[in-house]
Image 1 (cartoon, rainbow, N blue to C red):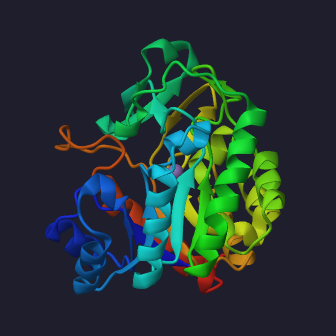
Image 2 (image 1 turned 45 degrees about the vertical axis):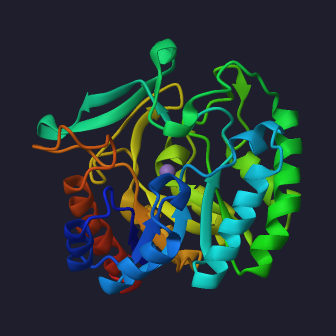
Image 3 (image 1 turned 180 degrees about the horizontal axis):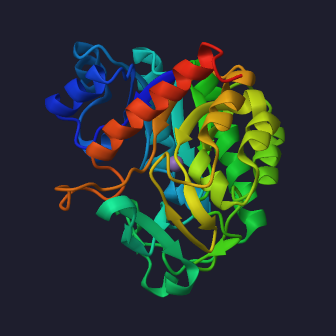
Length: 320
Ligand SMILES: [Mn+2]
C-alpha cells in the first residue's frame, strides 16, 4: 500500500510536509480546473520525491452523465487519458453522480475539542450546498437510474478502450451521499450491487473501483466484508470514516468513528491491495477557519501518521 495525498493548495510547504510524513504518491485535480498542466504537477511532485499517480476531481463529464455531450467532453477526456499515458499516471478517479459533486448541509459540525467536520442531513437538503464548482447548471434536470446506466455504458464504450491503450485505469468513486435519489436525479453507485453491476458492464482490469470508505460506511455496510467482496476490483482507496446513515451523517477523525480501522486496513492487505490510499476529507482544526472544508492540512498530517501506523502494523503482520 502506498500513502497518497491531495494537497490543497499544492504549495511547496504542503509538498514538504507530506514528504516528511512519509507520503509517496500525489493526487492531482483535473488540470482544466487548476490551470496547472499535468506535466507541471508531475514534475513538481517529483521534485519533492512524490509520484503523481492519480488524477481526480471535477472532470469535464457532467454532460456525458446526462447524455447531452456534444463531443467536447469526450474529446477533453480522451486528451486527458493520452496525457496521463505520456506521463505514466496510472489512475483516473471519477464519479457518476448527475448534477452534483459531493454534498453536505453543514460544514462546521462539531468533532473532538472544537475541530469541525462536514455533515449531511437529507431534511436540510433544500439548503444543501454543493462544495463543487461544477455543481452549477443542470440543477433542474431529472434522470432515471436506467438512463444513467445507459449513459454510463456509452461513457465506458468510448473511454475504456482509450484508457486501456494508454495504460490508465478508470476508478469509479461512490455517490456521496449514497442516496437512491438526490435533487430529482437517481443515483446508481450508491450500493455494493451498483459496483458489481459496473464491473459486469465492462469487464476489464482497467475498469475498477475507488473504495471511498467513508461513503461505504454511510451505506450501512460492513466495511471489512465489503472490501473482501469487491476485492481485486479495488485499485484506489479514500480512507476516512463517518458516523450515521446516508440520510443523516457526520464525518469523524480517523480514530474517532464507528469503523474498526485496523480491521479495515487488514482487509486491504488480505485482498492484496498495493495501490495508493489517501486520507479523504479531514476535520478542520484550530486556526484553519478560512481553509477549504474537508481539505485543510493539519487534519491531514494527523491522518498521515495514523494511516502509516496502521499500514506498517498490518504489513509487518503485528495485528494479524
Ligand atoms: Mn471520497
